[in-house]
Image (tube, rainbow, N blue to C red; front, side, top):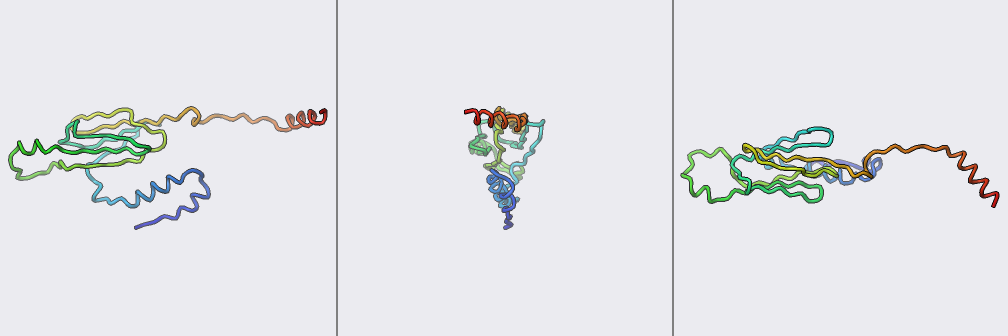
Length: 157
């Protein structure tokens, strides 16, 4: 198990303690157990993203997408009724096992849509910053003229 000393990060960055938790959980990921189903993450612009997941063999009603806090959870559970109708498999290369995959989302990233098309689940994400979080320019005033006026008012009283 690899651990990271994030003390320098805490000294120079305020409010990024959640980042340390994300790095720790990423270090604990077992690559073999977490490879199904395969997926892509695309950037569609500055504040738009798409997760595409290969879910061949799953119907729309066998998939679920949930968000809680900053975690997106995609799960699939195959119903067994179809397998009883089919014959005996001589080779089974299409995986139909249940899965659950979690993605950590940045602050203010929300799911805008999801669609199932040709065995691929497309999940559109969009980051919308609240108005108070958007960058704004702060005008710098001259402090000397205000200070002098304030001192004059105090002396006059």
